[in-house]
Image (tube, rainbow, N blue to C red; front, top):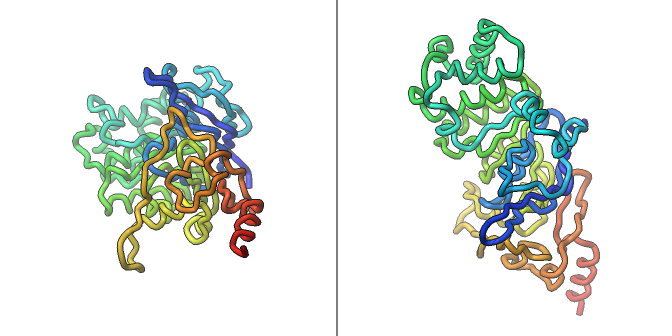
Length: 333
């Protein structure tokens, strides 16, 4: 499949009074045209920093992209001037931020906020911009769009505001849509409606989606592929069914076991411990201190990527052929 985005060896740091936080440490992944990639993991693992780096929205100072490439349709976004990036944001790549309550300007009507980006990036008349805004409100399921254009954010519910944020992100017809925790602040019923909306929008527009979430229920609903992130690194990547039914990394298995399920009984199994300090991250596997299967090599050397299938890779010594031979020898002695 055609790759629309390819991130290679991405490193992002933040300089603070306490030292340098290594928030993203050598992230590699790609996104195919027309697919949905979910990036999952605990809070603080670097998911939002990664997608903000793609948008070049890392504040400098204190943040800085210290290494890596972000190729969007073959163009390295890390090399572009800010003026060129402004012409890409909102047009070719759009982002839906975490909280719809704060993403909208309370002093401007919904119509003004919808049409602002369209007028800035495209040479359109007010009449054309209004027509496009009405089309977008209809696409995201806002009733009475003509009347709603004149209203302010406080006149909408949380679910409606999220739909409006989605409409603003899509009005310039981007090829890549980044959704950062788009359902976190919503109740379960509205979450389901928003996820159905994402599916419908992708069918209509063909947009490629990166979904940032820690909710595996959301992943199961709309993702095609999943990248599991921990302590600034992507430790496992695979198709949705591979991650849910054949997880290989102990952290991935821990995430799945800590989710309530209707077909199982008994207590949930939390992942004991806390993530490592990214002021001074470990040289080996960052999950070693919390892993029940950790070996001596795990603490000293970061594992290489092991291919479990054409679409499924994992960074774990347990899956490395060299470690498997050692474990097999120990089992026979």
